[in-house]
Image (cartoon, rainbow, N blue to C red; front, side, top):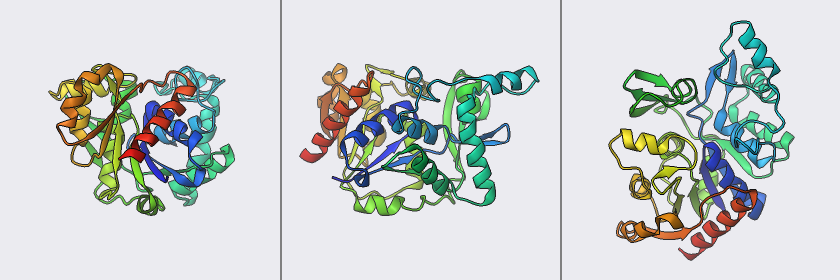
Length: 304
């Protein structure tokens, strides 16, 4: 079974890792959100790509899910001491990734080429693609004006109230090389449990017309997100945060929807949307949970 997984953030990275534990490498392509990429301290930083890659390589910080395990913070501590911006916490090992990426991009290499080389260096066998080689930047319309995503998410800690989102540059962005081919040969597309608004939507704005079965895993359990601001965003946009809200978000393209046992009482409502459902344990607290959930998702896809 060939799968294309759309991913962003920690939840997306975890399910991508679970799928990678089951599928042959040639049967899994992970397309990653780049809408939250930005330039900081002169470096090109790709948070979602790095989170997915560090997770697949077994290098991610097990406590936070992002950043590197065994990280040290000498560089950013000295940047702060010298009066530089330290609100985006870059670890010493992580900085090496950004330094080398920035160097290669300035030489004229594409982001997909750099990502491919990094995956090879880290021993990652499935294909990992940015959604596009062209810059797309997520802008948050808030009650304090329009904010770049990392300004909203990290610097302002998601405190401003959200009114909407804009993806700067998406009109001219093309899918990264290999993305269309992977989708054409795939048996199904999986939306990992990532933020629908700022992780999956940017990818869908670039990669359109998926003529394949699509299965989404809800990032919301019992009206709350395991990690990240998705539930807060839904509430501020006037939508009650729930698995039903997520299913409605994707309803025009969904074949199947995976929700947690805690939300089993909503399954019949989602079925009324003509979406097939799977109720299971979607929490991935331990590494073994990733493979378990991935197995459930793949079995569900096989039954569709």
